[in-house]
Picture 1 (cartoon, helix red, strand yellow):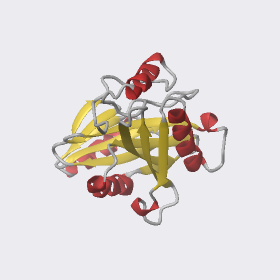
Picture 2 (cartoon, one colour):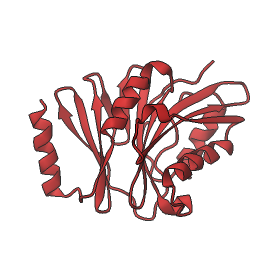
Picture 3 (cartoon, one colour):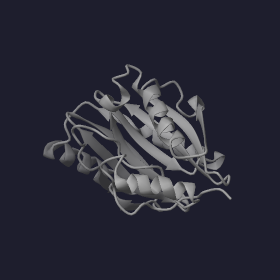
Picture 4 (spheres, helix red, strand yellow):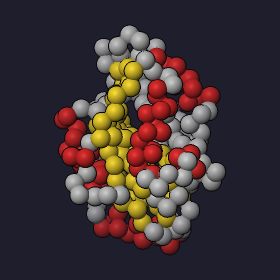
Length: 217
């Protein structure tokens, strides 16, 4: 029986935290979970912020002097906490950031990030499959989508789309679960809106984003 979506109750600031380990153990028992939470980094990013629009939410996630912006389309989308969003029934998304230091400062941070995620699951699951979904990103070079399927020893699975956005000091990531063909259009929408902004998300920038969101209502 496939593993489906369950909302993780709180954001986690360290992938290797005790909560993350418990979630990994739950996966092996066939529990209903999302992928583990935020990556390890020397300087934690600020919590993501969300601004309501007429058709969903505009999100912004800051790290240092830049931030990632993305749009969640659909009035049915529900914020669970700053890092977890219920996009639609039985489809969830998690927002995270992984510092480049955790990727051994690899110049190809997007491929290194996808491999880092896969390596993590190899430590906790019976079988892991990953597939590069270049068909979901068009001609962009700053984004990578990887489909990941994780199986426990009883054949139960958890699947997700890992959407990575290259940043100056690491990778911003959106994890959408479960991975299935009928949500490909939703993933494409997320990819098209997932962009790096080379500005600090300060009060003035937040005010500007708020004005943009109001104009979209």
